[in-house]
Length: 541
Ligand code: ACM
Ligand code: ZN
Image 1 (cartoon, rainbow, N blue to C red):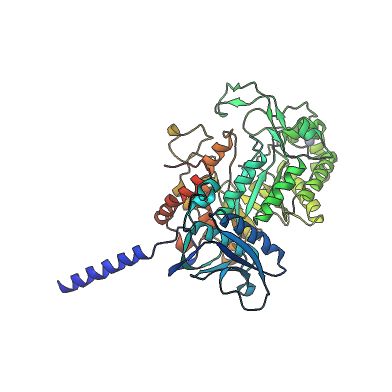
Image 2: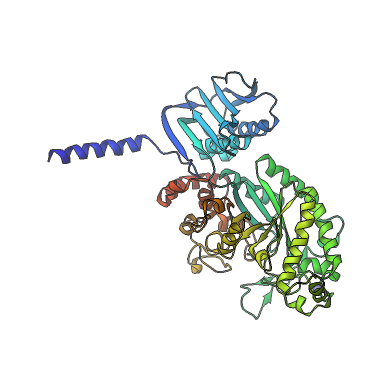
């Protein structure tokens, strides 16, 4: 009796402690956090200290200043302190201390006098700022709402945090449907909020070429436009079309603007230029690059199409190298994505040039011809100091020596590549295809098919157990893919990507041992208010 009673008291004490120690609602969940008593209050003039002479830190400081100055009557003064001397004792202090040498790591201490964010690098500081942001009222996301805030404070806390994986990506297909520069920036902003760091920009397809290439103006004059678009699902003929010309593209100025915007927010933009397949829009512009010589039309429905770049024609390589020269001028990313997926071999089997290439190069078949194609492009990009990423079909016929594999048809291709010592990004359809339905299709706008609810995204493990520790180091991370055949509007893209992208962000950032779907959904319910303030058209069950 007595012991039961004591147990009950202990239980009550524990539960009241839990209530007192209100859990910070940060997504992705930080590796380590501990609440402290008291709070830091924002009012009047607040100093924001940055190390003198550190330009990279200034963009972090400006991001935070812009955000905090939405609080009525708060003015942020940026001040400098001398590196190596004692840190300022009051205000907000940004610092870098690389001693633990963990890229993107940060430590944040909020006390009543000071908010100190110390990153292992300036990216870490930026992620500390994102965590601080999530501790502040959601109204701050929207200047009109923020103007009504009074007495903004943040509870004292200590956080130590670092990413589980270095590559945390979101992909967007802007070829099946086109999305303007403002939306791309919003897409990037949402990645930033969840500590994602790589934007994979799928720029070319059968249904549209979306990037201006100065040397080949027809790519956008012709290739960026299709005469109409399929209505309804693409899987079953007869097909019906809307009769409306559709298209658009990014000028090189647009691209520079987006790449710079992303870089300011510590996001790398990886461009994808598809080859040898998914290339009909390019062939429509320059028909001599196909095996039959055309004529070709920009494709108006969805699927995999048989006209691909001719692998036997040296003009094709000259063309692609010239395109890639302009692409690498625009994108500082170490990686260039060259596609490589879903390339039918039908035309190559019939093409005298392709067959002659197979003979000359002593290749066994058309799969080895695909491998020849990718290796030749890799060799070119390596000579320019860049590396290729390709979808897992680049394993067929032999993997290019330095290639990184993006494993989408499950994780098997990724495992195989990691076992061969290649780097891998996991993006299997089973967990990462946000074009799949997230609820009963009857209740949803038309989609491509499949079923991928939020809970399954959260179960994703990019690091399959069959790898040794050494092989597992090649798994750089994961990525959510948003193919837009059935997404005509940016609202629909948001609806499909969110909140699933947030679950993926936590999978990729938070240590595995801390993954807890119930806890995640509780934080997510709180987080929806922030997405509302940001005007995100997310799906809610
Ligand atoms: C892909 O989904 N075809 C990479
Ligand atoms: Zn050919």
